[in-house]
Length: 274
Ligand SMILES: [Zn+2]
Image 1 (tube, rainbow, N blue to C red):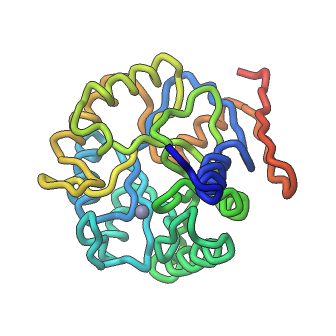
Image 2 (tube, rainbow, N blue to C red; image 1 turned 45 degrees about the horizontal axis):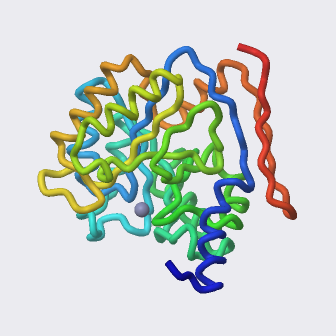
Image 3 (cartoon, rainbow, N blue to C red; image 1 turned 90 degrees about the vertical axis):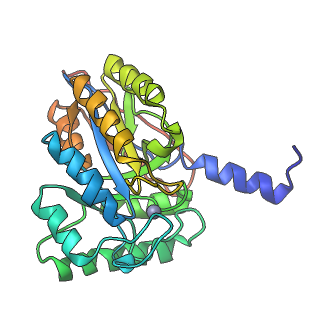
């Protein structure tokens, strides 16, 4: 495959975010962790997906772009204000997805940052007292500059990556697995959960709509329920993103922020405590 110089630069930049501006935390918990997250918040993610989680006594994390409220999207109609409030009332966690759903790689870091601020302000206005504690990067893995700029606002920022967080997690780019990529095959997810259970890692699952005729970004309620059932049977602790983080921090692990302006850097602090 021939790549132009510009193409190579772009490829390198996309990959490089994983290894720079990390905020690494060692994961060492008694129980493996699983979080369920939804991006964009199409209404079905709460009405169907949330209802399934709740039927198991669980809650999830909803990454919302308030500028999209009530609008149509490729994964169906987005939350209306009542859904946003209902999600909170029912114990789910809200997360930031920028106000205007800014592409995390293509958008200039300053514009992305402004859209984060706008989303946070909009949430406080709509639901006084509510705050976003985590973010998920819209559309793409983040640009390294955006990853660096955003780190200070959130306890963690979730990305894609189709992988588990095992051993350590980069709080500035928490890996997640988009359920729709499994193509409805529960064995793919079962293998991931088994691996996560054995390693006592943190598996984060993401999707968009949960509907009988899902978009290419969503999954069916039947599949989602199978996944949740398998997760429950694994004995994992299933909690929203920032609760999972509290559990990881609760066992006394140290954390180090590595946000240098100059050289790309990666660092993990390994605590000796248990
Ligand atoms: Zn999105």
